[in-house]
Image (spheres, rainbow, N blue to C red):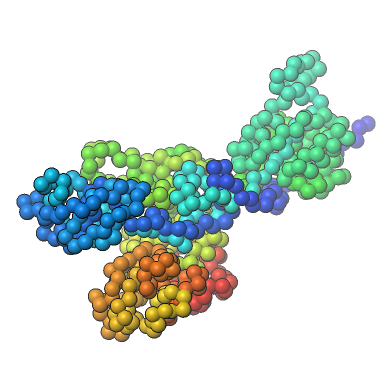
Length: 622
C-alpha cells in the first residue's frame, strides 16, 4: 500500500493571507534612468531642486508692461505706449521695460526687467505702424504672467514614496531635471509548472498518454506581470522528487518568490510538499477555500515559496486572492480599479466658453465612503495639475455650470487610479511633508492655511494643516500640533546686519513675502502690527511666493536681501537667520472623516513628533 501524506489542518483564508503577507519578497530599491521608469514605483520622496518655471514668464502673446502705466485704459480711451523691443521664447531679454514703455513678448518668454504684467495682444492695436501700441484695457501686477516657482517651487515635495510613475509623473520629473529616479525593486517570480503530463504549447500532444498543454506557466506569468512582478519561466518539472527539487532550487537561487502549480495535493505522487518540508520551511498546507484547497506556503533557500493548485482556474483564483496582493505590496503598487467612476461634485464649477471641456479632477471619499470629485486646475502651463488629478470630467459645450452635489462620471487616467487614502489641504510645512512619507497614497495640496479653511467649510478635505493666528469657522478636531521658529532669512553672515522687522523698512531692504493664503504671512502681519511697522514701507512686501522654502531660495540666489521664512529652511540652504518668533502648526481633521483609514494612518505617522522634529532646526513638539 502506498503511503499518503494527508493535509494538515486546513487554514482559514484569513490565516492564509497572514502567512503569505509574512513572506519577505521585496527586493532592494534601485535607481533607473528617467526613460526607463514608466510603470515603476518611487522608493523615496522626490523634492523639487529647482523652480518650475525657473523664471517669470509670459502666459500668452502680448506686450510686457508696467501695470501702473495701463491705469484707466479702455477701448474708448486707450493708453498708447512706445514699443521698445521684442522678447521671444527661449531667448534672454535684451531690453528692459522703463516707465511708459512696452515690449512685445511671446508666450513662454522671459518677462523683461521692469515689467510686472502682460497685456494680451487681442486687447491692443498698433498705432503709427509698429512703433506705438494702444492698450484697450488696464492690467494688474502679475496678470498673464506665470511667476517663477508657480508650478513647482524649489524645495517643495514634488512626488512621494509609493507613487506609481506614469507619463504624468515623468513629465513632472522631466520638468525638474531629474535624470535618474529612485524606484522600488521589481520582485522576480520564478514560475514552475509540475506534472509528467504537461507539454509546452506548440509541442505535439499524445492524448492517449494523458498529456495536456502547460496552461499555468503562461497564465500565472502574465498575472505576475500584471501584479507588478517580473516573471521568469522555468521548464516544467515532472513528478520525480530529485528533478523537482533541482528545478525549485534553481528558481529559488535566482528569484525572490517561487510559484509552482500542480503536485500540491495529498496523493502519493504529489511531492512538492515533501521538497519544501524536507529542504525548506513548510508554513502552510491546505486552505479552507473552494476552489484552491491544495495550497502550499513556505520558504526554500533564500526565496519565498507558494504552491498553487494544478487546475488553471483554481491556480489563478488562488494567485489573485492571496499572491497578487503580496506581489503588489512588494512592488509598491496599488490595487487595480475600474477605468471610470461616478461621484458627486464637492463644489460648483462655472464654465461657459462654448467648447467641450476635459476638466482635470481629483477624487476623495467622504465619511460614508462616497466619492467626491473636485476640480484640479492650476492653468494649462502647470504640470502639477495633471499629477494632482485622477482623471477628467468631460463637460459639454452647452453646459455653463455644474452644481455642487451633481453626479458626474470621471474617466480615470488609468485603471490603477484610486482616490488618495487621505486628502490634506493647507499650509506648506516640511515636518508635515515628512509625516506623509509614512502614509500610503496621500495627497497634499499645499494651498495655504486660508484656502484650507475655506475648503474645510465646503467639506472637501479630510485634513487641514493650519499655521498662524487664524482659526477655522467650521468645527474641526485637532489631531496634533507643533511649533516652528520663523523670522527673516538673510544671506550667510547677515551682511546687512539685519536685526529685526523694523530693519525691513528702515534699511530699505529688498524683501520677499509669502502669499496671503499662507498662515505664516498672517503671523508676519500680526507681528508688523505689534511692532508698528507700516507694511507699505517695506520694499517687496507685495512680492509674494507660495512655498515655504521659496523666499530662502531667492535670498540664496541674490534676488532678495531678506525673505519671510523658517529657521529650518535657512539651515538647509546654509543661510543666515534672524529669529522673530514661533508659530503653532495644527493638523485638523474634518469631523465627518475622523474614522477614515487614511486619517488613522496619518495619525500613526504623526505619533512620533519628537522623532520627526529631531533634525529640523526651530521645530518643537507642542
